[in-house]
Image (tube, rainbow, N blue to C red; front, side, top):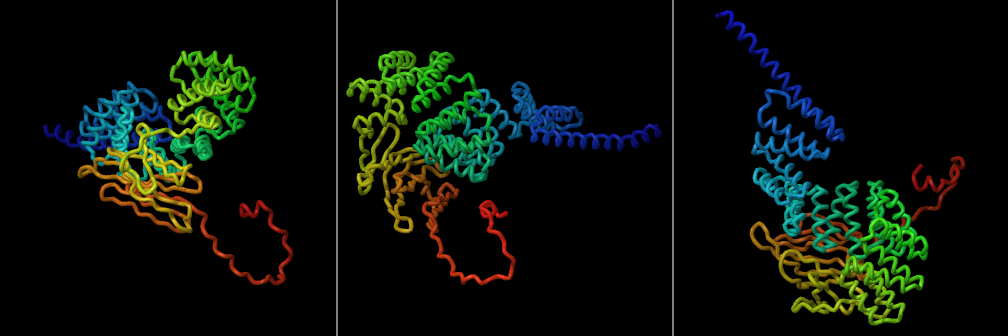
Length: 546
């Protein structure tokens, strides 16, 4: 009996040492698995996590964390069923683990179950109220459900908790863009790339926002940055091709669409778009070949028929064009491109009244269709929308008009300038101040306006926005959050720059005017040197310091 007790006492420490060694080995495997996942070796990560899970002495919470991590690896590997099983098992073992709810929510969102995903994000935030990623992910679910203001509120909370998160800024920018606040979107996209200059998605998003406000050359620059990060993404080339087309650079558009087709040869839309670029470059045979290929790939797409109709118009063959218009409108009775092309054909045939009606219909369906606007201007018709004025919203000579869900400010003193008053929350706009700056910022002005009521932590809060305007270019530089509740923006004007410490807690910087150059110092006349003669530095040396 004594001997047995001795054996037990001797073996016990050995068992403890064995469990400790086993635990350390398991910890090492999980660390290796995490490193493999970061390197992109997903299969290796899954295998290592699986080995770690074989340890019998794991506590429930430790096993849950490893299951969660393996679930993330499965998610990276598009193994959704396995990922869901791991997340579900982790929740059973450790119901207070916020991260696994967040990750399962992401999986559900990827599978299209946005409402179920919301429940998981809600649970994650109950368990961890300061969980920035869960706020950002819940905002993504709200975006899927079309609840843009809730999405913006969640993205804003995520940014407040993690102000250096480019993904949350990009997400909020996308929400602003979906709510037709392009300047608010550009503001957030610019902040995202200032934090991470290699964040290609934000360059693409900013380019799309710039396309909305007609800054096509700037959009091309941003698409080019995005292409540099994703050179095998055919859609990026197609988007830049569209920007080149809008900027009247058909030759560059054709090159980009050719690259897009090379990467995605089955895309009817790319062939149709390149066909239009060829037609604008008057390469009509190439254009017709592309339209034929687009129709072969997708016979039910109206765009190729509409573009081919316009091409026939350019070739003085209106009858063929009208047949294609009939086909396009049969496929889609609300095809803006078809109405534009028919308007141009009616103009060619001398049917001015029908042409104007078609072109106006095209713009009603797609207000950004520049070709229709140009055609109306050619016919001597104003493209300004006849919108009702908003009572008691103006200031001085500024007037505010309602255009659908948007509000537009205009001033007869600046006939080429219109400002989209980007609203948030509830209420109608009201212009509060108009400030035209003096030198050295001559030509810059600020329009401050009431932008709506939003829900704050202590109840409803008033929001004021301020549009920074370049009067010389007739364009809006930015729209800044001037006030939200008790928070006020701080503006600093110096050295040609404007720094705005916005009421949303972030700072924006704009170079508005060239900095004043100091006069060059007076240099004494050179004296002869005893040093041997040296050849002048080359241009390469001067530029690159070699």
